[in-house]
Length: 188
Image (cartoon, rainbow, N blue to C red; front, side, top):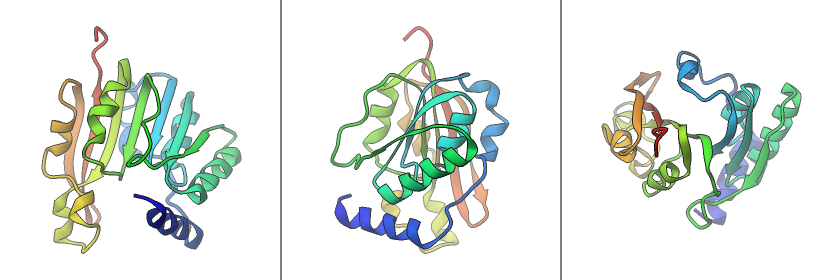
């Protein structure tokens, strides 16, 4: 990604209010998630998912390329009375944080080589939760670039070796999203 991407995301976070609220689709799947432990929120931005995880009792590390986004995440977490650790990271240039993690969240960040690395850092019984826009989104929107969009069922392919607990693709407003919860078997 690099400096240009960092500047782009910093400018976006400075310009407008970040999205807020719980990831509502995960509320229905709470029983499938661990009850705590170490969590990593990839491309966390202003911390919506990180804060939700911290409220659930996870020890959360939020990583993002944008220090402005991470500052907003820390401030929002403090406002909610929870703590999160934040680390400015460019996953295209820097190593993946060392696990194991009981939960890894990846919302709206697509780096094709990343999911095997994520799967390797999940603790036995731990889960990955992901939400990615698919290429069908381009039927209603001009952006983002195909580079950042998943093909149909690609997220399932990315999580081979994990037990898929939940998977859906469908329209949410003007975006076509793939949503997944997948667990590492206990005996791994």
